[in-house]
Amino acid sequence: MRQKVNQFSVVSLSDETVVVSIFGERPPLLPILFLSVFVLGGMMMPILILFLVDEFSFGLFVSMGIFLGVSIFLLRILLWNLFGKQVLEFHLDNIKHYFDYKLFHDQKLQGTAADFYFSKTSRGEEDGKLQIVYLNKNIISPFQLDGISLDELISLIQELSKPDSGHH
Image 1 (tube, rainbow, N blue to C red):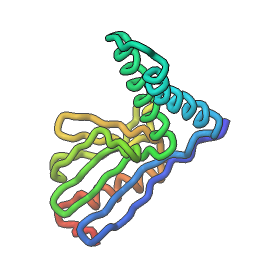
Image 2 (cartoon, one colour; image 1 turned 180 degrees about the vertical axis):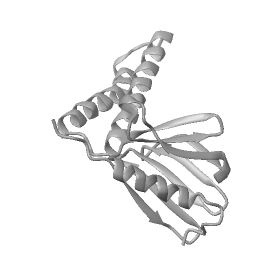
Image 3 (tube, rainbow, N blue to C red; image 1 turned 45 degrees about the horizontal axis):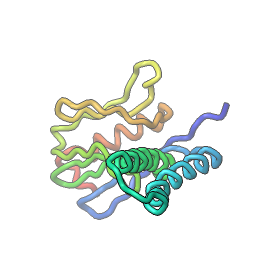
């Protein structure tokens, strides 16, 4: 079995903003195609129903809503597998965290450096992942990094989150 290669990148947008992105290896093409067919089919079904049905009823609208809801859920899964990454933006006065799906952003957090605590996990299958504690909320990264990369990432994040770092 091939080990997934997860990694991170650091981009300095300006002297005041540094963006750290953690991302993983993309999945094989076959599951992506399979998921794409279901997303397109689920989105096309309500349109086909509108053209094929002579009279509208409450059940029709419920079934269209279910098709669209499931399609949007599958679209999020598809986008995560294609473009998903965990993003940390370090600004001079605050830190932003979110999961980027291209069209969707999830678990948005924003606060000062004092509100965040960064460490690495060491619990069984969660071992080797970035752990973020924001106030009372605990977020564990979905990406597992090797020990050297994770240590490098955490020291970089701790350096960037220092109030006097200046991001130079």
